[in-house]
Image 1: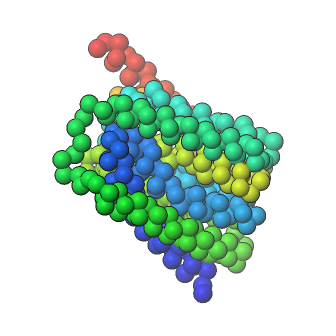
Image 2 (image 1 turned 90 degrees about the horizontal axis):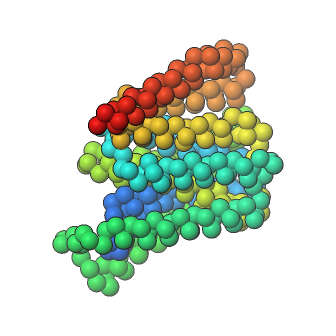
Length: 353
């Protein structure tokens, strides 16, 4: 069977499995009495990130460390720049105080921690286990906080309860996970075949095709949540997915395989880009408590530039030095200036109020 057909089938199975998983897990969360934001940060975010778990674990166990790490780094960059950008373009996104005070700083800290652990060229089994345990602790904290915050709200009256409802929801979770494992296997197999056949590096495939493909459930979930007015779930899905990807996906990949190598190319460019993108969320979220359409359009433009840079770099194109100079000399300074002015304007408006 063609490698491209394996990729398509893998993406279809991954997307379908994630849909079934999220529906079942969301139902279980509602039965447990969690707030919408916590559902977005945990159940929805972790459920839609399950493809990243399947793909990265399979790649790590197969000795394809570039693909495993590239999937995590590429997915996080894709989540913020493409998914958040597209959702904000559909409708401005309201940002809750908890995200600004707690969850976005946690996301930034987790990303910087992963960067520090991989500074020596690899993330070992002990480092991976520590990251995974951190993911469990963070999830437990969110669930406890969410149940406490939602304790005063009555449960939805139309929600069926009882053993049968619990069994159906749990069965959907198990079925979704099974599809995700199968789809992850097919997708990695096809992606590696395409990379070798076209002479494209496995790192580039992981940073673009695989990471975007495994993030399709996040795209559908965040955009639909935005359209339906559940904008806390849309943003919580992105932030929670990024935290989950570093702590659980990367952590489990390193803990199970024993070692995930961090290539010099990732350490010098791709991981710093991901870290910068996550750090940029804090001032953007801070300004006026929302993500406006122009900010969403800017995120999308940055993602297009990022993918273009990766393609030129992989092909060793002669236009790459010019693009690098333009980015360093104009684009990045203009972005920093724009974000800084927005933060100052927001601070002045709050002081006047």
